[in-house]
Amino acid sequence: AVLALAIGGGALWLWSGAKVSTAGTGEFRNKLSVPPLAASHVDEKTGRRVFDLRMQSGETEFRPGQKTPTWGFDGSYLGPTLRAKRGEKVEVRIRNGLDEASTVHWHGMHLPARMDGGPHQMVAPGKNWAPHWTVDQPAATLWYHPHPHGETEQHVRRGLAGMFLVDDDRSERLALPKRYGVDDLPVIVQDVRFDGAELDSGHKMMQDVGFLGDRTMVNGTLDPYKIVHDERVRLRLLNASTARTYDFGFTDGQKFALVGTDGGLLDRPATMDRIQLSPGERAEVVVRMKPGERSVLRSYPQDNYGSSWHRRFSGGDDTFDVLQLRAADRLRPSPAVPSRLGELELPAPGNAVRARHFDLKISGINGRKMAMGRVDETVTRGTTEVWTVRNGNGMPHNFHIHDVQFRVVSVNGERPPAQLRGRKDTVFIPSGTTMKLALRFDGGPEFADPRTPYMFHCHLLSHEDQGMMGQFVVVDKGQRAAAKDPGDHEH
Ligand code: C2O
Ligand code: CU
Image (cartoon, rainbow, N blue to C red):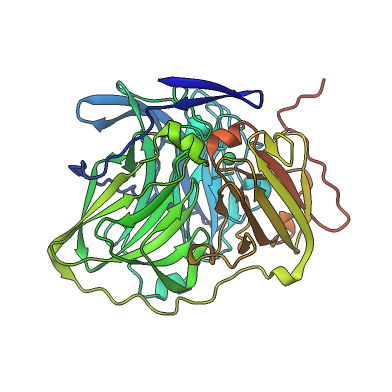
């Protein structure tokens, strides 16, 4: 049954059959697919490492004999993993082979605004776009996905997403599992619901948080298992779902080491038994396996609804068995996780020259809906700021800022928990929460661009599409914001 309720003038659709769980029912019959590493070559003239990525439509057989229409990069669903080292110049040659305009945004990447792939860098059907930049940030698990204003949820849901791994000297030296696809695994988690052979578009069961599926996939594989041959395995967890927040743990209660957050490695590992990730967030964890063991990564019940009132109508079990790790009978020994991982590069709130406040509501941020032609905030290159972000909206939101990796200074005035102590670009902000973030707007002269904005927004994609997004420009002292929407034509 679907209940339509008029609240505050807006209709909220609640799907009362949304209570879902795959706990204990998983047969884990499909071998986990691992996105291939993208091929690249170094262009001799420019010195850039060049990748090619083609956005295309196709069909994917998620279930035997059922062909599902999907989108992907260089394939029918998701995309290859791009990989580059700090200090390298990169160029990605994008071709839009779809019959709709879209963009490709580098989530978590520090790069000039016109290379960012936000809603101002639309690529028309049949057209190319070749952003280039110098990778200048610590090793991290980043990702890429479209960002067309008002359409992001649908473009990501159809399958446009992939990982971008940054390496550096430290990550290459550290004794962490690092053989891609062997003991270092991308784990791209998405929830889906099928409507016959099709991926449900979400329109029928839109909740106030957005689309929630009734099962999960990892790297586009339903019921996935992975055979492991090493004593320790690194999982690079990415929540690429459009609305759902997960709370990951292992069914046998075993602990794991959190070694990295959105923007890179921690200074020291944190031992945890659960890690919560809202849409867009990443975590790198190292798990220890015993020979012959079968270990299930599960997502435990979560407050995906934001209030008990909503949960009553919406179920609220939402437990998913996400991935089974099958240890071989004999495992290669792995070195212990180092107790020191290195220096954490984080902005110092004491250096802040400016404080800003953001109030999150589904109707907009600070009372305003996103407008392509309006710049909401102007920041000065080379400075540190403190942003206070508050959710008093009675529903869950998160907050993502382009270009920077920030420090979570406090959560409701308290010291943040371990998983929020590293470099972050996206944070879950449940209702009733105020977070203080310290950000630093670094970069060379090419980062000052009064005409091209970066975005900040809720990464629950239907909220973003409905206008829970704002724009900021980075300028040099004395410059003024001059953004205009390139989609606006002169009349
Ligand atoms: Cu992952 Cu503005 O987005
Ligand atoms: Cu939101």
